[in-house]
Length: 289
Image: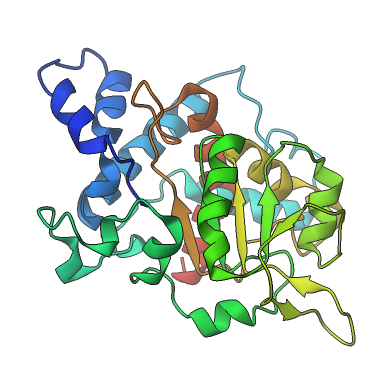
């Protein structure tokens, strides 16, 4: 989930009178205002969306995934391939989503859980530990990863998160290339303007003065590219790894037409591919599957 857009509820009511005519439209309709729903509803929605896209991907010759070139892969990649195949049958549970229990009352409009400010939302309960976030020591794997629908929205969220006064990794394509972000995630300084906020951040291993970024904000396409960047050359994974990540926030901000990152044509498939190739295998491994 994530902080809802300010007009989510109003837009959802407006569209209730129009009956969706296809499975795609049903998902788009269900996605409006999804951030206001509870963990069980979000699990059902996200699971349905994930299954829809994995089935479409499996039946389409035109879809190109990172796993289409596995015929001549190494044993390490074969192990990764096995994880991805199992990921197709993954079932999202309500326990995979944050629930604030008492704060999750839909009629409580004043609750911080429903705040439209990302920093306030994180501090209201989803963030596991502010102390651990301030002293994050794991390169390549931010403690908190925020996924949103555009670079413009990413910049807006970074401004909201700046009140936490922590370094934030910019993981979207605007005004930067992927090589700078690879350096940033690995603990490198990078170019000026790649981080936002002051203070915080744990130091890298040894005597390195470089910081590890506890928060990353990005778009699905760039996150997917970083996830796969250099993966074949390293047994540890790509430039972006989720092995230490503790919280993924899917920002459900809606654009002027009522689409969010889960339902917008330009981002929905990339988001589901990121889930399939990165998030779901990690969840499965942590669950011992």
